Length: 557
Image (tube, rainbow, N blue to C red; front, side, top):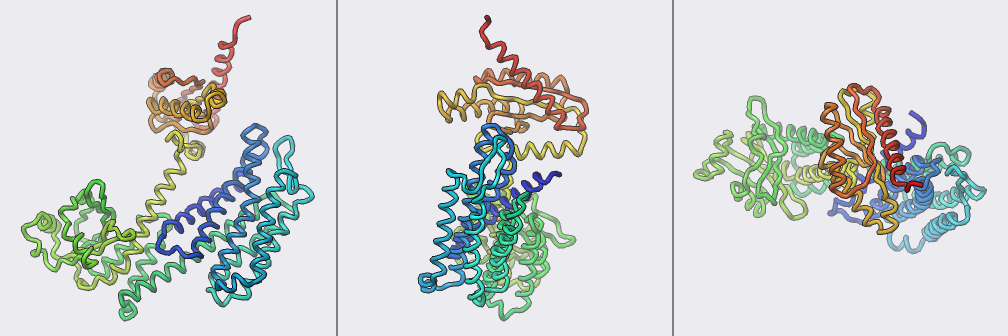
């Protein structure tokens, strides 16, 4: 793998991590302190910075119009966001270290802000004067004699911020001191290297690493704060066994990494052991359809699993639970006989449930689900553990939703709803590793998109692109990718040659129906061992068809 690809991958992963981190800070609405607002801005700006640097790396050396503008725009944001992130960092450590009076009185604070503003202004000036860099005819970046200024200005601000950290280090934890210090030390090391060698985006990568460390320490301190609050509220300080189990639960929930379902399942296992219960579970309420859905379940050995049978429980059946949640904060059924004669009783009998304990899961003040145990044999009258876990379980559910949304967005083209270039590149990588049988490939390029944009505006151009996507979805639902402004790719596997050729003709008819003029290159092969090479053949055929269309459109002499 080339150094450029490694560089781009590292930058894009860093950008994605910082984007997820910023989303986390945005959705935790109960803790919107001034310090949190500044670290949120730092994560957002760093995410954009790393993404722009990746774009600069990917488009460098491309002399076409898209490459020309992408490199210049991305390069501008690289320099600008380095200065802006440094300014956000300065406000962050001031909010963390200083009182309002100290913040207003210290001269170093004012100097740092002035230096950052000067840095931002110089970046803007450099775009019109070539102060920091220029581009050659091949669209390749070159430093100019003024480039060291772009390093010296932030170094001055970082040195002053470092003096603040050292002077007031006793006011923050050791972990936070090391994390914030990494934002100063790592970029300074990168700057010292990059002054003489700039093959990799060392400064931006160093900033990204520092953001990761600051995010992890911030989350750790927030979880510790949450644990202290929950412990105080539920008198956990007087119950060592509950505190021990709670720590195990948090460890399970936070130790699952990206697999939040597994982390939640492991958490339910700890809860089940603590209560010596038959089942522990999480239900989520679907208010739009008036049902409760069993999304997670852990069962003791020898007990039947009921998750698949409890996917659409009408809310009316558990109305008494919801009333108890609002009134008491818990629902405890001492004996199933107390609900005898109700539909709930029949459901409990079917699952052999004699007693039950549950607590609500809330988003702000609204109940979004509940956490419960069936047939608890120990601690059945003490909801402290479940109540203490409400925040963590709710937060895990919210993180999963954000995770799923980010996954969908990362593979979906927002304009057309088709798969995007990320998904296309993933398919290419998979095709390099495995031979594919009976593969049909299509390259499609719209004709006249630029003319449409120039004559009727970009809204009309977007509408043309969407009509092309509709035609593709008519014939190849879920199989088309938009890989560029007016370029589309379809990969069908497995598909017989006869069926594929019929689909290609159906696509041509659909394009006519949707009033779209496009060039299509199609290719079918019984065995494909090199998917990129296979698609290049379809691409070549598309260009040959485009040339034929151009010749046919020329007036005869």
